[in-house]
Image 1: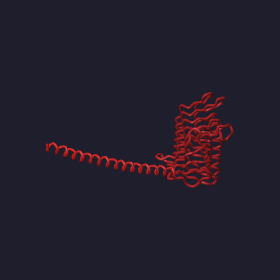
Image 2: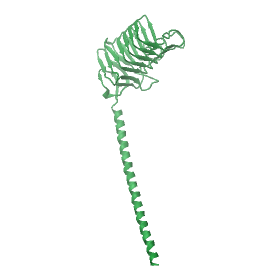
Image 3: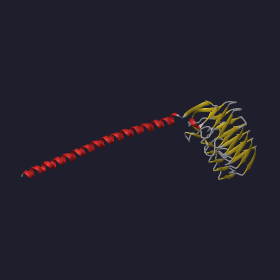
Image 4: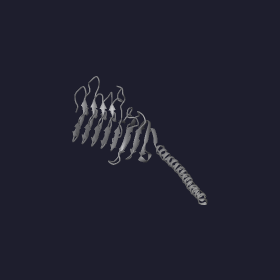
Length: 283
């Protein structure tokens, strides 16, 4: 009987020890989970700060501009019309990202100089926050003869959706009385619904257009890729493709190219798959 009384006590003692160990293990796990929870909260806070900091470094810009833009201030969020005033100069360095927050113009005035020079590895991007509403494109009016666009992506530019000239012409790049060199650029998905020159429009201008991709642009009246009026141009080593000209009432000319009262040297270029919907001249 004595033996039978002692055995249950030992078993009960061992059970208490095991329960104590379980409780300590549970407490450890709870404490560890709390530490992990605190660590995760701290990590989330760090991530929020980093993300907020990246947005804080954005540069809001509008109005008159000049000087030098460098990628350290990216992105350049355009909140109103831009203007390089007469006689002033703006240099844009490789890697700059210019993001238009609305349908705003980038004007280069009389004798103003714009030099946007990217590299093959680090291009300069002009685009719109909202692809549907777009931005108003680069607009050169009697600008300096040394203006240059090199290794730039020009996308989602849109001329005005009305018949009033000249704002209805030139979705991506508009030139009047200008001398401009465009080289190694990608000019795509721009449009001039009610006008000419979805990608590039030149009037009374002298243009050098070399080694570019001019594709998937749209216009209503003529030259969805390139439209020239009373101008001279040297056009060499470009891909001009998948550009479309369409106007509901007809009368449109030239899906990829359209030249009126102009002299153009066209060489070493691939021009294909351009379209005029109702009239002639898919070329």
